Length: 314
Image (cartoon, rainbow, N blue to C red; front, side):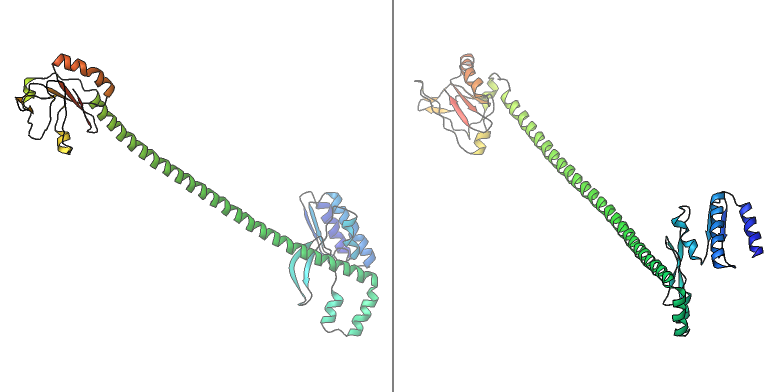
């Protein structure tokens, strides 16, 4: 005991705010009451001296209640498997340890009379304290198990959340890609349609805005083998007879002259000239026909639009 006191005094004098103090069975080796009081005072002195951490093991019940009077202390115990009589080496924080000497002795075969007498001598109050400690240990174990389950479910929920975020991002990317693909298809179709429309408009404008070409003698030599026109007689009556075949509709040329080779009566050929005009601007052409006839001594004008529809103006 004297040696222990010397060691305790040396440890206390050397401990600093960076010290870890380990005490095994503090207050043992003497009267239990005195040992408990001495151990409690010694632990409080280490706490007051500023030691970083002091860990002490004890079987004194009085030291287990120290945490309830001084918040600088905390209880902890090693979990014990009473079935196999072995420690599980799991630390239960907040639960004071309890002695299992009587229970272990009973399971090791100590006579029941001795065990029963020991329990009676141990006292009802101490037994109640042990029962409270047992309940605390059970509560701590259940809390620890619930904590593990909560952590497991939290991990599962985090993984599920990550998967949901990944799925949502993939859905958004797929939807964006589909939208851009449709936009490209629509743009390509619109571009092709605009190209075709512009080409058609250029063709229409080329036919509609082509200037009038004066009649020349060379143009009077056009073949009339596939053309069948009937010119009006000199009284002003005129008719036009045209074949509906596609070949016939493509034969007349713009500005072409059909003259005396066209039989119109039994008296023979006529000298009237017929102008074939291709256009789609009917309003302009109808206004210009009198000018054409007066300027070029034309008797009749055949107008063919871009759809191949022929109109005769006598």
